[in-house]
Amino acid sequence: MSKQEVMDELQELFRDIFDDEDLILSEGTNSNEVEEWDSLNHINLVIAIERKFNIKFALGEIQSLKDVGEMVDMMIAKHL
Image (cartoon, rainbow, N blue to C red):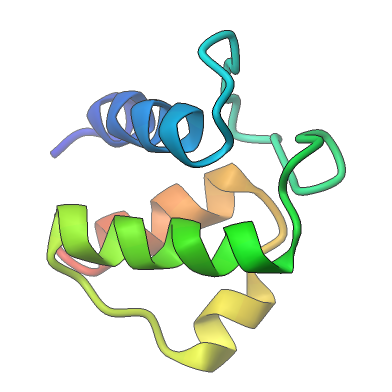
């Protein structure tokens, strides 16, 4: 799966989780830029990503993420 394909799939998940059909992701998008991205929605997002892509994140991995680009890179590293 290419980086762009992962970004496209993530964008749909983000729109669903954050209930914002106009949300446009970039690699630099972070929790400070998305109004509804709080700790509860972060957990919901991680669970949705794990289910959709059939991958698992370790707690340390989740805590280390700074933006969507790092998330995508980590997902691809998990052999998407």
